[in-house]
Image (cartoon, rainbow, N blue to C red; front, side, top):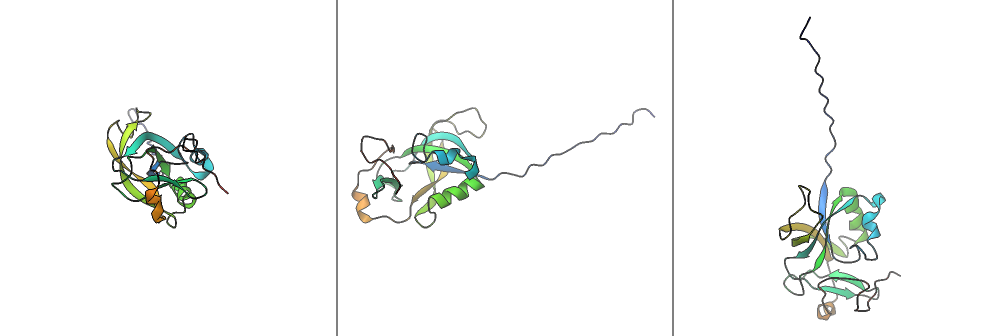
Length: 168
C-alpha cells in the first residue's frame, strides 16, 4: 500500500526551572570577597543579568567589626545604590538565604531597579534604562547609630574608605 507512513512525534518535556532575580550590592558583586559564591555551581546556578541601581534611595553603610556592607531598609534616605542583578535557581536562592541569615538577620525584599547595562541580546535581558524588580537582602534590624554612618552609592571592599571586609 502506497501513501501510508508512520509519523512519530516525540515530545521531550523538561521540568520548568523556577528562577528569581536577586540584586547584590556588597560582597557578592564581581570583584568582591564573596563573589566566588555566585560562581560555585554546587551552590546552584546564578546568571548575571545586568548592572543596575535602585530607583529609590537607601542607606548603604559599612558596619560591625567585620566591615560588612548593609543596605538599611529605610527607603527615601541615603543614595541610589549600584549593584548587579543575577537570575538564580531555587538551589542558589536557598543557599543565599542561608548565607545571608534570612530571615533572622536579613529580609528578602522586592525593590525597583533601573537597568544600567547588561550583556544584551537575550529575550529575557532587560533594556538599558528600563525599570525592573528584583529581590534584595536588606537588614531586618540594625543599630540606630548606623543611620548616622556614611552612606555609599557603590560598595567596594577595597575602596579608599579603608574598611576592608573580613570574617572572623
